[in-house]
Amino acid sequence: MPAGGTRLGALRSFMLKEVRHLLRDRQTLLILLLLPLAQVIVFGFAMRTDINDVRIAFVDPVPDALTLALRGRFAGSGQFTEVAVLPGTRELEDVFRRGDADAALIFEPGFADRIGRHESGKLMLVTDASDPNTASRIQAYASAVVTAYGASLGSSSLGSSALVPPVEVRGRMRYNPTLESVNLFVPGLIALVLTLVSALMSAISLSREKERGTLEVLLVSPIRPWQIILGKVLPYLVLALANVGTALLAARVVFGVPMRGSLALLLGASLVYSLVGLALGVLIAARTSSQRAAMLGAMVGTMMPSTLLSGMVFPIASLPGWLQLVTVVIPARWFIVIVRGIMLRGVGLTELWMEMTVLAVMLAVLLAAAIRSFSARLGNQ
Amino acid sequence: MTLAVEVRQLTRRFGRFTAVEAISFDVSAGEVFGFLGANGAGKTTAIRMLTGLLAPTSGSARVAGFDVLTQTADVRRHIGYMSQRFSLYDDLTVWENSRLYGGVYGLSDRMIEERGQAMLDTLDLAHAAHSLVGRLPLGWKQKLAFSVALLHEPAVVFLDEPSGGVDPVTRRQLWEMIYAAATRGTTIFVTTHYMDEAEYCDRVCMMVDGRIAAMGTPSELKREHGVASLDELFVRVARATAAEGG
Image (cartoon, rainbow over all chains, first blue to last red; front, side, top):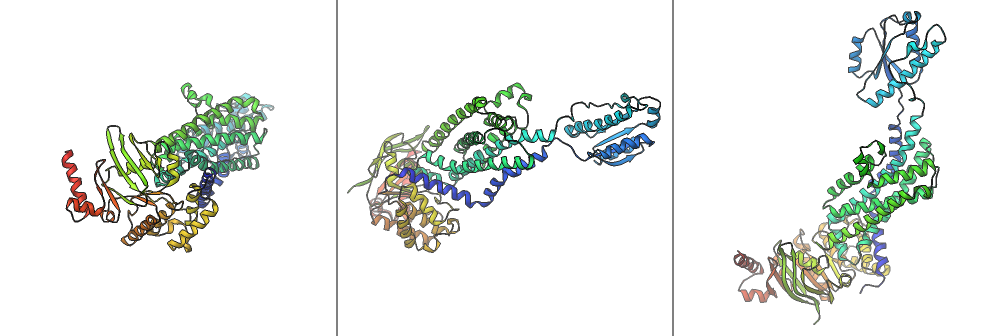
């Protein structure tokens, strides 16, 4: 006869087993532990909207003092590297086609003479716009260099208006794109890592038991479905919180991202958000019949919306109206607002109660649905 | 003699398909009861109802003295189950697997320690206590899975095709273990489609298309139907039912 007090014993044994699974699969564990670090660093550097080392070609048919001086300015700016000086525009075509240059500045012949005669010196800036974002930023940088040069000539015999290039300059250089973008990204990355660890991992681990047939054995045993779910969820929850710590630390040390609000509140919000993800993972595992399907389901159902529709990459305000409505049901959208609020603006629960409530309601609904679908699917079909 | 399993008019329908149709039978304590049938005959559905995984559409069943529908928790505490698929975790050691299932069935740490040790000694697996189950040969795995299913000393143990894919020697050893457990008073409810295995059972029940086509001790059945083996009988009843149905 089995002894009494089986409840805690069953849960404890099950959780112990989950921890063992987790610790034994060294590769996965290592990936999960290093993931936040790698993501913050890679995303942080890759997403910086700053551009260095623009390869620029000059078309300077008749070099003179002024064209040489301007070229020197580009070289000295630190952002441009001169890759070619060409006699005419015909050669330029080849340079672009080979991908040797990102931008080209074309001088007309007699540039210095024209300026000497108080006429406007004509310049044309050509950029490789196959990557439009980069191209427009290069335009902005180049314009800034030219404008600065024009201004330096302005006090002498030349009118500064003479060198105004055919591109927009204003505003672009004023804010520091690097810092801002990293600050905005880190909260999104925390959401992404948590989604990955909680939703994806729990979906995979539960569907593996389903596929292997071990779940059936557990369901015949006295352990209850909620104990199975809790036992699966808790170890991943610890991992998820460790990940938040790593991500915050990396953001702080590498990019100097501030942490202006309460760390405890941030961890609390992360806990709720992870539980939402875990419940989603369980729900996905219950609804799918194979590990592969569960993994795909978790990717499409959680990772994609968390990246694309959460405001992490694309501002929600820039989405079409109907898509903005869709974002309302995406947990990451609310979580990111919370994290940004705490980290960047230093606000607390007073300001974030609505987002927290939304997450809490989502959690209650999903958890109920997960336990229900889990028992229904395996118990009565 | 007490009854380990009592089944009365147990029925399960899936939509318009009837997987198990009004089956009734009893299994006495300590009996080795063979539940036979072709794939799709309703064996697995019946087992799922008896283990509380599936609610019956109608009829009732008691296992170890508890009603499967209303006292599911009690039923679960008193049964063991070895599924068709391998039920241990490959990435856990022999000892860790025993710990897990002992714990899930509410055994105390000391009981797990004692019974686990005794189990390993009986299996002659003490040297492999800390190897991963995934590294064991299949035959050992099956014997281990069976022993783990008995760790909490259940009144009734359900074995769903326990000898699938194992070699003849292991099959024989597995059946010796099954007999040993029955001798200690455990009721064995075993499904199989190997008719030679069915001959080892105290009593068998043949399922065809969700209904009981024949039931009795192997020798009784062979005498009644004038056949030399259960294999022959099985083919005969399956054919008769098919002719009747068609």
